[in-house]
Amino acid sequence: MTGHSHASPQDPAQDLHRLVACEYCDALYERTALAPGERATCLRCGGVLYRESSGAYRRLLPLVVTALILFLVSNTYPIVEMDLKGVRTETTLWGAVQALHSDHMTLVALLVFGTTILFPLSEMLMMCYLLVPMARHRMPAGFDRIVRGIRQTRPWGMIEVFMIGVLVTVVKLSTMAQVIPGVALWSFGALVVVLAAMLSFDPRDLWHYLEPSGADEAPPREDAR
Ligand SMILES: [Zn+2]
Image (tube, rainbow, N blue to C red):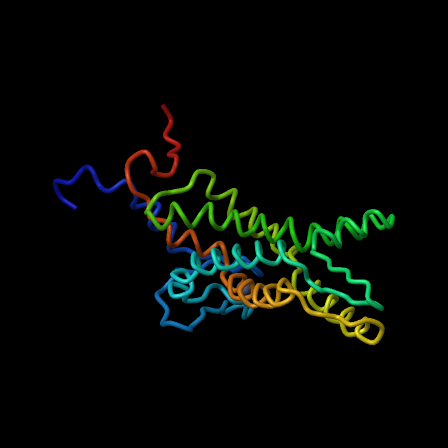
């Protein structure tokens, strides 16, 4: 290092970038490159530190967009159509939430709304908010807060639990009425699969694909002035 007094300002940040702390016991490690499909585990407690996820990262934006489209279809079309002695009824997810509410099951209505509409939708939108600028090598504003938001929202999305409930109900009702699966039932099934793929990606790994570019996007420095 001779002659270059202006070393890259990102050097300390790059060093920090390579450190990874065990989520379970706080042991600190230096990140090393992994082969596809490999994962690093903590020497002390055996917890998973990180996985090789660059392949998963490349598939992430198409996955999120697919999930959003399936979500839209699932909420537009009826889940089931029922024919009970000539009387036809059909319901959408939102219709079911409203029916629960008007049957004085407001708490259940809120739970269904939160776990099947609100939380999954907000997670997908937050992912888009991060991934679209990142695809153009730009840093989205509030990156850290959004990553944290995604991790906090995740446990509340329970579309797969809802799907099992719907399937059990459909099977039970089919003994009393003619039940015709609606478009949304199929798209919900597909959504569960796509979401499972999306959820296998840890949003914290996004930090490693963030490319700081341009002086105005460097991390805040805490120099005393
Ligand atoms: Zn550990």
